[in-house]
Amino acid sequence: MSVKKIINDPKRVVDESVAGFGLAHADLVRVELDPIHVVRADAPIAGKVGIVSGGGSGHEPLHAGYVGFGMLDAAVPGAVFTSPTPDPILAATKAVDSGSGVLHIVKNYTGDVLNFETAADLAAADGIDVRSVIINDDVAVKDSLYTAGRRGVAGTVLVEKIAGAAAERGNSLDEVADVAERVNANARSMGLALTPCVVPHAGEPSFTLAEDEIEIGIGIHGEPGRERIGLEPADRLVDRLLAPILEDLPYERGERALLFVNGMGGTPQVELYVAYRRAAEVLEEHGIEITRSLVGNYITALEMQGMSITLLKLDDEMVELWDAPVQTAALRWGR
Amino acid sequence: MGLDITWAVDWVRRSAQVISEHRVELITLDREIGDGDHGENMDRGFQAVLPKLDDLAAGSTPGDVLKLVATTLISTVGGAAGPLYGTAYLKAAAAAGGAVSLDGPAISAILTAARDGVVARGKAESGDKTMIDAWTPAVDAAAAAATAGTDAAGVFAAAADAAEAGAVATEPLVARKGRASYLGERSAGHRDPGAESSALLLRAAADTAAAAAGA
Image (tube, rainbow over all chains, first blue to last red; front, side):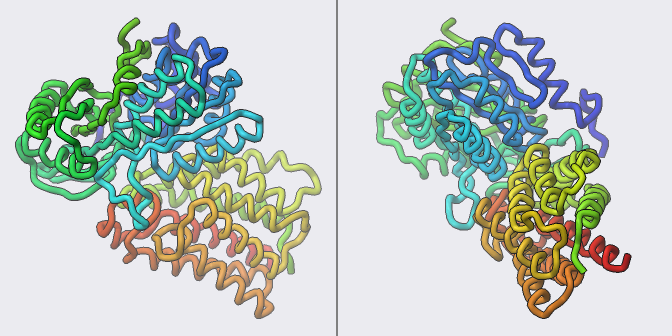
């Protein structure tokens, strides 16, 4: 199958895209290409904890799209769907450290964890205080001895926003890390794919689905999760995603939540809102109060069609930090 | 006879060639149960090592070559394979020390150190359907061969045979580590790409060692 993409040399896609990102958002970020990382324009900021995240490319706007006021200080893009190596992570960590320490926000994928671990060791050897928070909000995977543990998926966006706000208001490294841990502990996600996606250098789909088949429980690369089933109406699909989320983290009636309906890159907003409508209906039946929401393509898998639903159980501090001003390429309010 | 710096450089060149030749095969294996980047990442890493071989100082040892491979793979491969293979070569380099020539027992010690490093980093055990399922049989076979007094080339040949059998034996296994573990039962029926690349690298070592012994 030949796949049409707006690319030049497949090996140069990430470099050229990140360079373009830097040109487009020069007011927010500066871009270093060797080793590749994206840093907030005014970093390091005296007295502020630095926040670094990163991972394979292909999930845009994650992570570079969240570099700026009130969110990340640096993003480290790897090759498409491949964790960055320790060198750029270390370079980004050094670039944002003001002496107040640096938080690494890491999605729980084996490669990301190993490379960030190595970079954190190297940074510590250079005298930088680093703490790491591993995001693992995906309920599709059983957290057991028999897997690499739950994957870090859409909850990552919420952690980056809320921890970013905590750092921006001047909290200490331990405080920022604790807030990030708390958001992760209260976030649950589950996704599905209608179509596969095509990694530029591979040139063919990373998995195949029959015309009328969908994959339930995908991670952010379209890698399989729980099962393959036939396509169903939106309401039924939403129910399939919400059920394991609510089973995994039960809510008391009257508890508050943030409802995040995320597109995987190839699904239009009109469909995401169809899904949101049903999710809101189900949560109301459970007596859960949706006090904050986010709908759109915020953490994607290239051109994959599909979506994920994330539910974050909110407390007062999380609400305050969520509402705090943010100014990044992909998320902006309050300033 | 022992294996020296000339062999070490030959091994790395042969490794780069073999990985490049099997790039698509490794991508395909990885696409079936992972994310399809293993061949691409390993090829990028070994191609990055090649130009650096020309800059090796006079008097360099096999250990220096292994260390060069380690640091280059760590900084170019990414994914899980970068830190895991990087650690393997780094531990191998430490085990090789400053020796100018490596005999059978030295090769056995190097392979054991490499395998132990991967286990410490990745925390996989035998039967988890990972590169360890190629490495552990290879280490055991190498130790037995070395104990029996086999020369360095023979130790590598035993290791390569066992690694290849180990890679094949990952096919029916259900993955418990790495990205394939998310598939659960569906990971059975596919060969682990990390075990396959490990077998390829050890076969490259055996082939170049045999050539060195014959020279």
